[in-house]
Length: 261
Image (cartoon, rainbow, N blue to C red; front, side, top):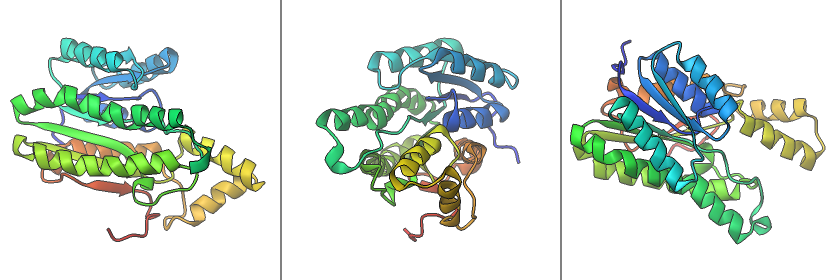
């Protein structure tokens, strides 16, 4: 199936590894020109080299919680490629902690890194998309938006808010032929999943094998997901084939969320 993405320009945040990298790779393989950012120069450049096997790539060292950094990344992308057609927002998760263990500073840091980067990046790219009457905004979030987890208090709160923002943006931007969707990941084998394993192993006194076996047993497909499986969903949502799909918080979780809503 031709996804109709050849020569589209995609910005993917926090894309040096994990879900951001998987998304950038899937889009590059479909013919997109990609612009990626991350905080660590070494892993960012390594990923950029992998992506260049498929086409033009711009990479810039940027912290997604930096207002100036996001603006500089956007301007560099425009200078290199002339426009932005697709934006994939992505960030590392807030601290793993229960409610009474969290300080005001941690809450505010979570808002900056998990919510405001989405707001700021979207605000940068939307005017150009409106002018061209075509755009795709895709927010990478988490299943905790629908099924909160005790240890992920900040993330559960803010990801639910992102689902609300996704629907609101879709309503407002639909007349400009801009679709806005969120991807709610389940248990995917990324650094974040291994960090959660560290926490649970320490708290519960279990082995890593026991932790991952327990996670898999709770999933109808009986396995954890691969980053590639998220990246391919992102490429579909960005494509012409998904042109009538907007305002959706799409679960990519192997069936873990049991709710029908």
